Figure 1 (cartoon, rainbow, N blue to C red):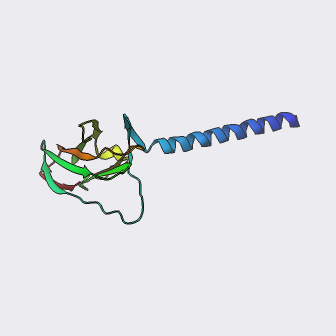
Figure 2 (cartoon, rainbow, N blue to C red):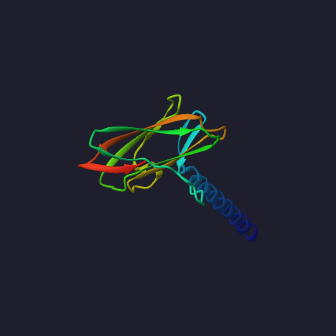
Figure 3 (cartoon, rainbow, N blue to C red):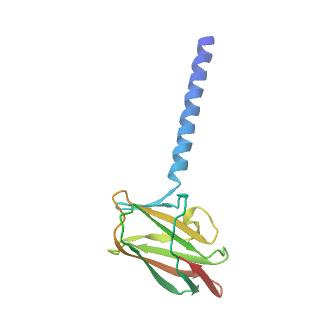
Length: 151
C-alpha cells in the first residue's frame, strides 16, 4: 500500500511539473503576435534605460488614411512601433510594410494584448531589420470627430 501511494504521489508530482512547464510556455508564447518570413512581431518589451524615439504627431478622422515612414539606417534587430491615440472609444488600424514593401500585418488596439488606445509592438529579426524606409499606414477605423495620435 505504501508503495502504491508513493507511485501515486510521484505521478501527481510529474503532472504538476508538466502543467507548470506548459503554463510557462504559454506565457512566453503570448508575446508573439505573428511571423512573416524572418520577422517576428511581438508585444513591445520594456528595454529600460533612456531610449530616444522620435514621434510624429498627426490627426485622423473616420475613414481617413495617413501614411508615415521611419528610416532605418543602422544595424538593429528590433524595430519598435508605437501608435498611441489614448482614446479607447475610437479605433485606429495600423498596417506595416518593410522597405521592400513586404506586408507585416494589420494591427488594432488589442494587438499588444491591452485595449488602451495604443498599439505598441516590436518587429524582430535576429539577422537584422532591413535598412531603408519602413511604411506605416494608419487608418481611422471607427473614429468620432477628429482623433489626434502620435506614431
